[in-house]
Length: 378
Image (cartoon, rainbow, N blue to C red; front, side, top):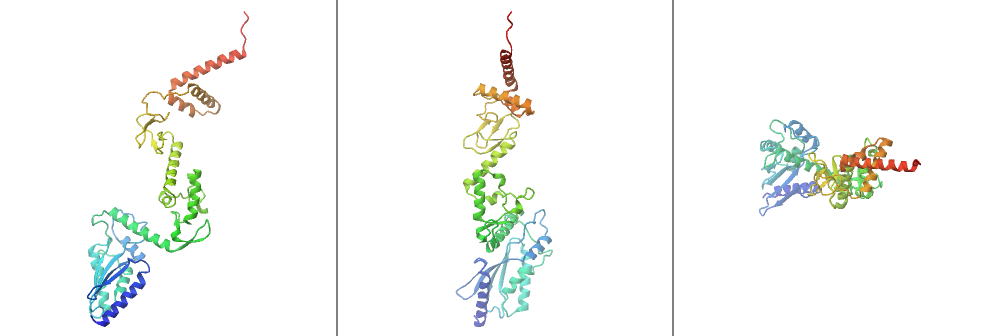
């Protein structure tokens, strides 16, 4: 191997190592075989503006690109011949999940044109710049989704996942001021909510811990002042909560949500009556009062006992039931609210409850007569 070529190759590897291994050890790698031939690979990130141009120019059907800010890198494998860069070009092999082979061939021809113009000089850096900034969309160079056993949707999921991971790495590399403790924190110790407000993990976990212990799930929103007004409140999502609370706290949140749902819409939902089950059950639309929980327990929505078919709910204390029904009737007479009376009549049967009502009215009439009248002496 020519000493001049070897020295140039080593200098080029040292320069690339200094630039790229600061970001991540898997971005750029190379090795030298027993014959002194250098080979390696580099993952080249395409510039954001080029990504957007490719996205806008490509026909990918109904796929939504709205939240895609970057594309996975193009992998460039290289082998440096013994006479590179004086007389021989580097051997290049490009691979990419979102460009078809025909498009990669066109890009590779563009790299050879660079070599022809710069022969005698180290060109891997120029190759990288070309891939990053100079790929131009055309009828041949367009994004391809699917292939290799992937559907377009699953391929898009991978692209989005890569973008999210890249964005998170950048976020963690920065410092942020938490608006709660007002201290500057590393991004590794912070979280950015969907509303874009950033908090340190310690402060936000403490905030959520208080809300969970108090059962105040309605206040589980971003604590930033700009998100506190009703028209701007941003709820903390379940995916964000999973990063902030323990498994036991997450179970309590779900239980509180189910309870609230059953309380606010008792006509359609009920909490499972089985001890230890925190699931909310949708009422059966075909059979009145029937609830079938995912845990397998079947119960009556009214009395919350094991399902008893069309039979009336069992009455444990007749006197207590009579007093409840009479009070419901009195409340209806005073404020017009018939909710409790209708509930009891639906649970125990309208005719059955009205029979008690007549009995109560007769008993009260006799009591009034005894207290406010005297028997005729004749």
